[in-house]
Length: 366
Image (cartoon, rainbow, N blue to C red; front, side, top):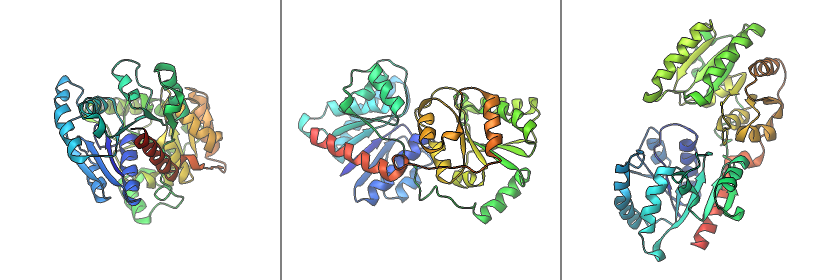
């Protein structure tokens, strides 16, 4: 099977990392994997793991991007994929219009994944055009059914799967730990509360700082670690967070590391991981990754994150936006044994096999 995944870029984020993981597994199972994007830091990994990458400017939200329709159509004629899997709205529009211009008999099967609960408008409706849709959680499936004329049988729920080979229980690698303490000596001997995720307002870094202000009153040895980078457009937000840290008197209690490619080691080192998105998130990738290494997670009880935690670690759920309750739950988990169970539907093996089954259905129906 020749599969073409299409997304805006390959930098950081759950969609990007998930696409690279799926590409690797496709190659490992003998399929041909191609990814079309505007490029990014994950391209070299993608290629090293056996996939082909095609770089085209399909990411810019501007009318000029529709100038890529003909080049993309020529690319599809050259590549002749069996399946095209679109993962984002603007690339999906370009693919759809290019695909429609192909002779009907030679059109590949088309599949989309709803990675989020997008604003409901004509622009977002493109994700519902393919005959086969993947929803990454039950709340995303309900969003599709509530907002688009899609028959339920066209939707398959496939939870984002954690790679339990990479995210497995183990102590942090000793040399890594030594280097970390050289770079951040303030972390040594502390109870580490990890806040992973790119720096953007809705991810909840401001709420994390407010929660840490409450937590250190209960446990002065707690230390917050914010792991995640700020894109150029978000550098002002990073400055705001650093200013807020100072205002709250947390400069000695919170560390910002920026973007890191060694997140699994941070999960293993952390005592508790936090998920604090300010709006319902379609899925919480950081939750299942942390749980897979055996680290407890605390999250607000809403959205896809709540689905994951309800199944794997219900003790980590707290009422939405209740920061005192959040701080108290973190404090409790610092002082008790966590009972975590990552169910099969949240593992990468299940995701890959379920996705391949969708591809086969789509090819049969094409």
